[in-house]
Length: 261
Ligand SMILES: C[S@@+](CC[C@H](N)C(=O)[O-])C[C@H]1O[C@@H](n2cnc3c(N)ncnc32)[C@H](O)[C@@H]1O
Image (cartoon, rainbow, N blue to C red):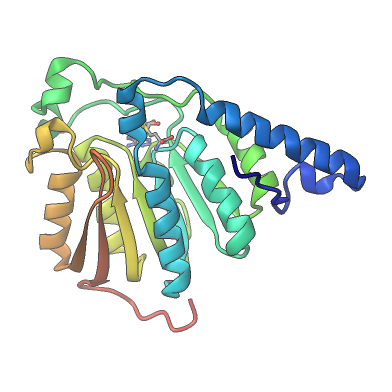
């Protein structure tokens, strides 16, 4: 077992001035992580999360090392990944903004014909109100702003919150985990039509293979349509776990130049 003695900036431990107490708390943190890592988990759960966290860390490293400017946008958030991203930003990119969008009441009303005919809606595993976050928006916002002060939690359906949000600097990384075609479509149409996508953006679709990986539903369809509508030039960066796929955007119709972003 390798001990991790990092005192993360803005963490509770960092606020403790008495060094011996700080060491005791770091030791307790290590024991807690050790217990979590060695908790008996079934193979399915292990594989579902396989490479997910590391892939997000690789994307964060990519935007920093490749100097891709702009905010991070997460669309569909339950909190655990958000804490990891906030910690990472506090440590390695403290001025970068992090925008989180979620209704905090699950999926919206399912109205689009595409969603209504998708296998997961027909089978009943997705429905309006499903998959809501267990943590409240207020609690999450309070927790995250203690870790990384440039974190903004936007509560409500994307169709309302996105147009009401100003993101002058554009995006450098998009993480979309909102499952429905209509939800992806709202996000992609908005960010591309408003020129919010900067050169080199990494776009991560967490649910590219849902609905039997059919190109007719969910993020696969929304991405294909965005590529056609905005003439997006991109590189396919491949799958990053059982369901996720990522792309890098080089350019598109209407991409603004942001020399000072
Ligand atoms: C699969 S969960 C996200 C899990 C999260 N990425 C994580 O790993 O913690 C899908 C989320 O998308 C949100 N969502 C889907 N469509 C939405 C929309 N149109 N507006 C706002 N939130 C939406 C749901 O509320 C839900 O929290």
